[in-house]
Every structure is written in C-alpha cells, then in structure tokens.
Image (cartoon, rainbow, N blue to C red; front, side):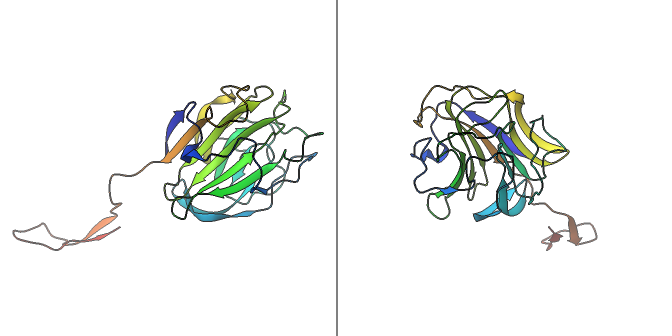
Length: 238
C-alpha cells in the first residue's frame, strides 16, 4: 500500500523549475486535436520502478488522465468513478481522471508531454497534460501532471492551478479492482484555477510506498529442535 501527503503551494516535487506550460525539450505522447479517447503507444520507463511493490517496465497514457502499467487495449473508460473500479485497468495511476472531450481548436502545445529530469539515481519522469481540454462540463484548458520518482518509487500528482475552470475528477492509484488508494471522491478538482503558469503555487499529492517492519521471514529451517545453551546457527527462508 501507500502513505499519503498533500502539499499546498509548495512548488513542484523535486523543485523542477520549468513553467507549467513549458514544452521545449519534452516528448509528445499525443498528436493533439484528437476526436476520440485512446491509449498512447507504450513507452518504456527510463529507470527501475515499482508500483504496489511489483516491478513495472512500460506504460500507456489515456487522453483523459489515466496512466497504466498493464498494457491496456481498447477505449479507455471515459466517465470517471470512485476507486477501486472495474472500468480501470490494473496497475493504474488516476491523474485528475475525468471525461474525455474532443480537443477542438487548441494550440499545438495542447498535448500530453513527457520529460525525464534529474541525474541517474535521482531522476523523475514527468507526464504532463498541457493546456488541455477535459471534463464535463469541460475546462477549455488545464495543466496537470503525474511524476514517477526513481529510487523512492513515489508517485506525485501535480495540480498546477492553471485552468479555465474547475473539473470533477478522480485522483489516486489502483492496483486492481479490489485494491486502490483514492483522495476524496470522484468529484474532486483543482484547488485553484487562476494562478497562472508559474510553479511556486503548485500543489501536489504524494503517494509513498509503505515499508514493512520485518525481513519477510517465511520459515526457520534450522534448528528444528528447541534452542539449547550457547551459540546456535539459524537458517531461515526469506
């Protein structure tokens, strides 16, 4: 499972300094001006990452705020719901998941973008919906992001407080149809919409993998009899 923390007006996690709407140096994961919801082409993760304690190596992104490590196919679920949900693929991040709206006449930068920041061992993968149309009723533009962090395996969902209006979205993580972690309800939106593209006022949801307190011992193999006096070697199975 995960522990949770909410940071308000704390800038970006890791203090990445690029503006909310920056796209130079980023890689586009969508073409823009889409008329129907879909999954992106699968992308390889740039570093080792664990989700719900299990290794994952690639991901797909939907046009309406879903990221999945389970290679989903077909049309992504459109109307957002509470978690866990059978309409959401296993091993998914719900990053302000809301109803898909055809993008209409948006700017060329109104796409989903990806960028790796930091140095090996301390890198972050940013997946950003930039100046994006989403929701019903829809915002004509909104900027928000998911961040995967190397080594800590944390997931951050970043509210960039930059949108034309608020939305009613789902924010959380889902391992499968019976295990998930959600913030609020499926009607939760942005904390603010009018703060502009600067990063200092950004808010972020931080999901930290829980650590167990034991070594995960499955069995004590030897000795099989009660301990005697003196030193006794112990063999265990982990």
